[in-house]
Figure 1: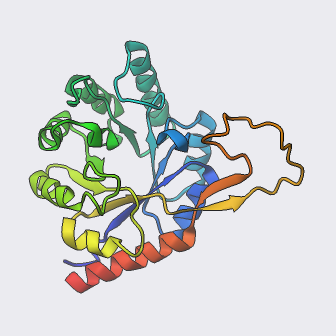
Figure 2: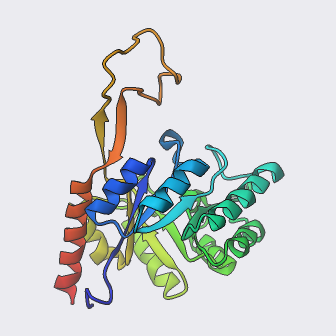
Figure 3: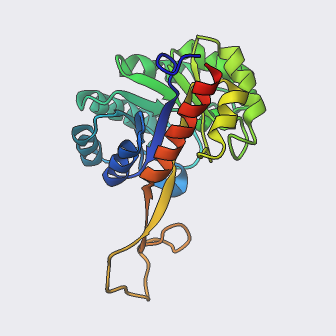
Length: 258
């Protein structure tokens, strides 16, 4: 394996422009821009997408997910997804990230294919809705059939390390037909092992840290959320140091294998 031609690609999931810039500064090859981290990511605002596209040199992918919860969408929600894809295309986004399932846990191939066709020439990633499918091997074949460029997965386990055996099987099954991209809890201390065991060429991570709010006055009596998921005075942001160390670990692993 030659690092010059087979450099591991790092995709960083971020929830703000500041976080996107930190991830890029740390060496991220691609940014996945989302909103609403407590529910695993939903479509960010128009302004956030425009600002990120303007500020970043790295490739920008945007999640197109109209709400949190499951991946079984109504006709109205599907219409929102199509409109968001159109907006992303107009803004010059490089790719979108989608996922639609049927009630039985299989991939909704018809509507996914419609989104893929609508998104062209943007790249389309099928996100971790894949990890909620009943039969991962069949789901992979279905996603390939829709024309998606890649699929994000933790191997149907809470973390990529726990799901690495299935991920390795999926990488072999996929061959050159689609990119299988491991994600969830990937860090500088385990990415080398995941590269060796899964043979994947792209990896997805958040690699974030918590910053304390600069607010001096804090009303202790109320919360703008329900108090369960949102902490107003803590800000999650990509940690450029973590990203840089992960970049170095990935490059070292591929150099050793060359």
